[in-house]
Image (cartoon, rainbow, N blue to C red; front, side):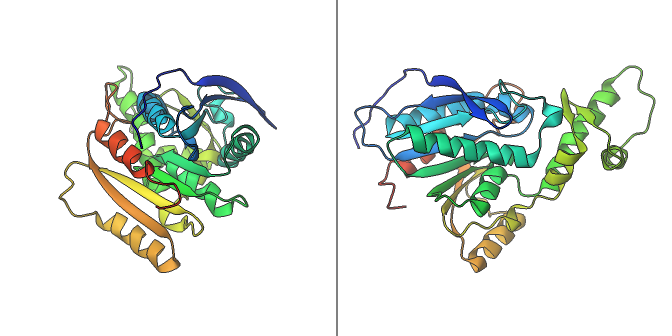
Length: 286
């Protein structure tokens, strides 16, 4: 396919849902390319969303230039969308993706819909696909979270770090204490985000090994320090379980920084190049 570069801005709009409006950006496929399908980008959790915006925008433009439309949606309570974060629930986020799918069906010229999720957004993409009546052709996972409980523990540690750095902190509160507060129905403020106990409980129970998608091809991009290193036992176990159940998974290893977690905004051109090259093929071939 001839390389085309289009830096025109995405179209911003608010998508109407049953629970208010969601802020969206739509990247229209370049007019000189053959339409290959569409992607819905599902952003990660908390501040990882902000750290990843630049990478998401770069990949969306790369997809646009090879013939894909890309819909970026701020989920309920996130970014510029309606709602407060403490009101956010996993099921509401799943409904947001279904509204985005409906919008694409009505506003794009192709029936090929793909989901693209980063980190916890990757688990949301898988969860939506597991229960969707609509055909999801491909699922693109960028460094998916493996275990919701471990992810939530890491997130709660941010609360402990902030407390330890406080000049007036004299307590001995730990992760177990924070979890007990959530279990008792308390909302916790963590790194500027008010985490509701219902959302925390859902995340706590998420396991990527349980989210087996059989109708779609799944492309998992694994960010590692060295592509020559062996795949981790935890990821190998997921691949083994998915394979036994008939999941069509392809694993791709890319060496670059964890751009969603670095102190400064970081790019990973290798990831964009590999992802774009993969989907430059005929969409029906991979």
